[in-house]
Length: 240
Image (tube, rainbow, N blue to C red; front, top):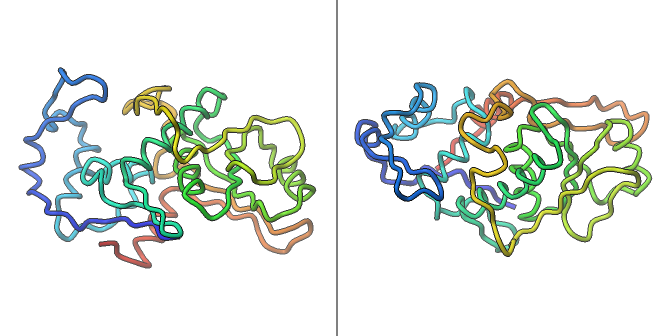
C-alpha cells in the first residue's frame, strides 16, 4: 500500500492564490474571495504555495488532506495492489464514513475501532474517523474473535468502522461499513462537517490509539495526536 502526499504541482504565488475565489459545494452561485479566509486557514493555504513547502505540525491530518483536495483533486492519493484513488475520491468516500459516524453520535475525542485489511477501505476508514473528530483504534482482522471482543470491551468501543467480510468482535455496538465505491455520495459539507465544525479535531487532539498485542503484553498502549503524527512525517521524509 502506498499513500502519496504530493506537491508536484505548478503552484502560483501566494498572492495569486489569495486573489482567487472559493465556492461552497452545492452552491454554484455563491463565490467568495480566498482573502476572506480566517488567518489560520490562510496561513495553511499560503504554505502550500511555497516551493519549499514542508509538512506543518500545526494542523490536523484532515486539514492537510483537504488542502491537497483543493490543490490537486485528480492527483493519485492512494495506490493499493494496483488500485488507484484520487484525492477527490478519497475525500468524498471518507466523508461518507464521517457522516455515518456523526449520525451514530461520534464526536471529538471519541474512540472508534477500525477493522479493515490492507486495502483502500483501510485508508478511507482511517480518514473518515479522523474527519469525524474521533481517534481510531486499529483492530487487526487477523486476530481471533475472542481477542477482538476482549479489546472492544477493554477499550469500551461503541462504534467500529469495518470492511465487508472481515471478522468482527462479539457484542452490542454500531458498525459503519466502508463502501469503497458507494452508489451515491452525500454533499461534502453534510452531517455537520463544516469549516466551523465544533467537533473537528485540532493538532493536539488524539489521532489514534494502538492497543497492546495481547493480554498481559509488555507493549505499552500508544496514543498519538495529529501533531505527533505530522511531526514524525516531517522528520522522517519529504513528499513530492
